Amino acid sequence: MDSGILTSVLNQLAGRLSLGYARILPDALVLMRYLVAIELVVLGLFWALGKSDITVTAIKKITAIGFFLWVITEMQTLTYALIRSFAQAGLVAGGNVINLTTLFDPSAIVDMGFRITKPIFDDIGGFTNIAYHPVNSALQFLAGLLGLFSYFFIAWNLFIIIIEFYLFTVCAVILIPFAVFKPTSWLAERAIGGTFTIGVKLMILALIISIAYDVMGGLDLTPVTDNSYQLYCAVSLMCVIAYLCWSAPNFAAGIISGGPNLSGSHFLAGAAALGF
Image (cartoon, rainbow, N blue to C red):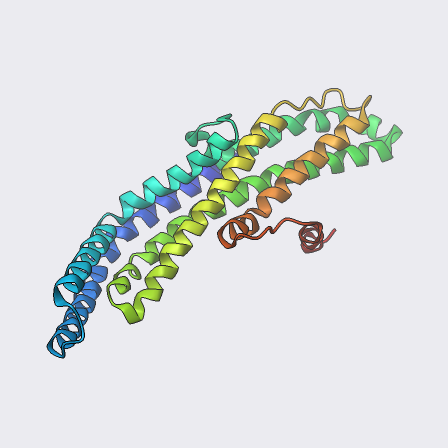
C-alpha cells in the first residue's frame, strides 16, 4: 500500500485551489468597482444634504477601499502566510517536535501508524499461534487495528482542515469587496472571521499532532505478548489523541467564543457517532 497517496492528493487539490485566486480575482475587482461607485454616490448625497463631514468621511472611505483592494489582490499571498503562521504557532506551543514540512504531510502520520503498530501484528504470529491463543490473538489484532485507525483518523482530520482552509479562502475573495459598502459589510466580516476560525482550528491541530509525535513516537510495543497492559494503554492513548484531533473544531469555536467545548459528553457523542 502506498500511504503517500494522501499527501499527493492533498498537494494536487491545494495546487488546483490556489489557481482559483487568480481566476476569481477579476470578478471580485468588478464587484468591488460597482460597490465603491454605490458607496461614493451615497457619500455624495449625504454631503449634498449636509448630513456628514465630507473630509473626514472621505478619508476613512478611501483608506478602507485601499486596504480591502490590497487584501483582494494579495489574497493568495496573505492566505499562504496566514495558514503557515497559525500552523507554526501550534508547533511552537507543542515544543517544535516537527516542522511545517512534516505537518503538511498526512502520509507521514499514516506511515508512523504502520511503524508503531507493526510489532502488534508481528507478535500475533502465524496460524499455529492463533489456533493455540485465539482470544489473545483476536484482542491483539483488534488493538492493533484500533491503533492504526487512530493514525488514519488524525491524518484524515489534518487533510480535511487544510483543504477546508483553501476552499473557504478562495470563496472569501468574492465576499471581501462587500466590506466597502456598509449594508453588505457583514458578508465580508463573516468571510474574514471564518478564515481566522479555520486558522485557529489548524493551530490547535498542529499543537495536538506535535505532542502526538513526541508521545506516541516513543511508544515501544515490542514484545506485546508479555505485557498486554502496556499494549492496551498505548492503544488507548492513540484513541485519545485521535479524539482530540476530532474535537479540534470544537476547541477553535471555544477559543473564538470564549467558552470551553471539551467535556465527557463530547467524548460520548463521538463514540456514539463511531458506533461504539
